[in-house]
Length: 144
Image (cartoon, rainbow, N blue to C red; front, top):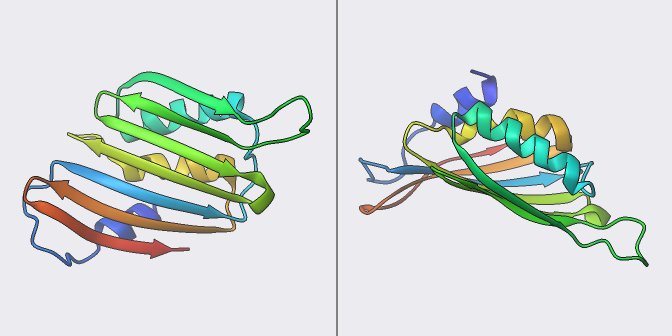
């Protein structure tokens, strides 16, 4: 387990949710790179899903590149048996917004190193939410 995973998992509870059925990460990558090649990103998503212990059902990534554009961002989603992982990139801003939600034994925090390794953000911000019918709980925020 890396330091990032330990820091987020070791956070103190700020709410009252006891029986969370899913962990939801909201991830901001700033100063990131590799934000235009959706074909390569597909293999990165596969690696991240495997690292999290999730089951990949389908990936759909779409580039916004046109004939007039040299480079453009992309958007996409990986459909998982445990829920989903999505991304939207703005290469002109060096920014990517990711959303990783997993239930069961899958751990979305374990997907983060593969994503960071590929997109190489200068700054990562993560909000970890515990989700359940009992309510939404902010477990931890992390900036690094």
